[in-house]
Length: 78
Image 1 (cartoon, one colour):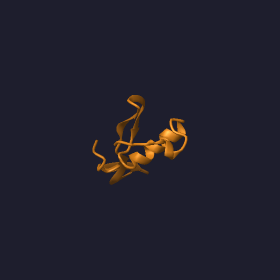
Image 2: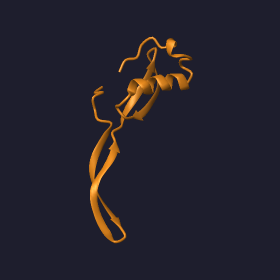
Image 3: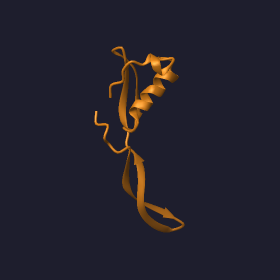
Image 4: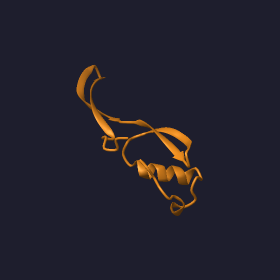
C-alpha cells in the first residue's frame, strides 16, 4: 500500500449562488479500502484516508475490544 498519498486532493468547482457563478477549488478526501487483519483473519474492511493508518488501526483494535491495552498489540503492518 502506498502510505505516501495525500489524504486530501483539490478539485476545481463552480458554484451558483444568488444568480452568480463563482469558481474555485474544493477539498476532497482521498479514501481507499483498508482491511484490518488479526491473526490471519479479516476483522473488517473500511474506507479510510491514507494518512495516520497506524493510529486508525490502534484505535480500531482498542474500540472493538480486539486489544484491551496498547501493550496487547505486538505488531502492526501497513
